[in-house]
Image (tube, rainbow, N blue to C red; front, side, top):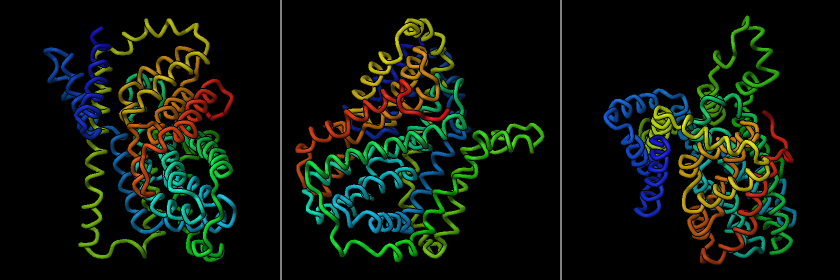
Length: 449
């Protein structure tokens, strides 16, 4: 029971420090790590140190930091603005076009930046005024943006992706190359779900076409923004080389060497995006040492928070693994072997959605992700499907009032009382997110393995 008690202490410390003490997730993860390592007893110093070293060496920690820097750099160059201009040219003249553009833009930006509050702040600062000029009320605009906030977590390379991938129950079963394509399709399903929701909101709450002055001719937007599409496309090569059939093709030409070893995905993906971004955005890059220093000054707090979060999340997972969490959970998980996958999905999904109310996605997965994964796989749900569904349920941070930080960001931009969209955001986005996760878990919605 020692490892299970350590897990309980880890969860409790995160919740108390994050919710009650109201400190950030990085500090909460550090406190959770200290709480878990205390259960190593006289070996606490050795286990703690070795676990921290393992966290520092992890390519997961490197990739998380690299993606934060790349996303900040590409946002500062105006790439996101050009993508949104392109979307508005395609959709803005139609009824509800601003809502659809905001949804797709949130997905595109979320695939790069992942952070819910950042998605709302960046896309919402443009899309919320657009929607209000499209005869939508401020409450409707804030509802759409806060509901879209969690979409970034469902794409690969988010903090949620890395935290769950480092979980002690996941590490022995899945590697990054096993779930990259899975999460891309999962993200696509979540965009599709939100487009259907946007359609319902447009019809029920009234959203007109965009104001003409907000719409550029498609030729002008495409001319200005087509190169921005090359940056997200840069991830295609390493993904194709590490997933079937490209993996087999490359392995044959490397004389049997596993291409996943030759091309470490979590190292090459941020580098591929960075190189493509530097080439495409070379004219908009900071000029001179002072400008670069200013960029680093802006991004360093985010890097620090992400770095601390990832380090202690991975280190705590290592501690729990060393304490034998998997072996201790096995007898309890065996009782779920006869439970139908639907029942397991309904129960585990409900727990995750409830926990995601006061916590953000990363904290939720750090707290209950390992146990949720073990429970779903014990019920017969394939490992890659369990991985995706857990992230779907945990991504409900933006639509889980009253603790949803992105909701308050959207309400602030729209200048409305946040409490007025608590019920609508739960009905329009929280409940469908829970249902979509269940449908993926039982195989109704297909995702690749």
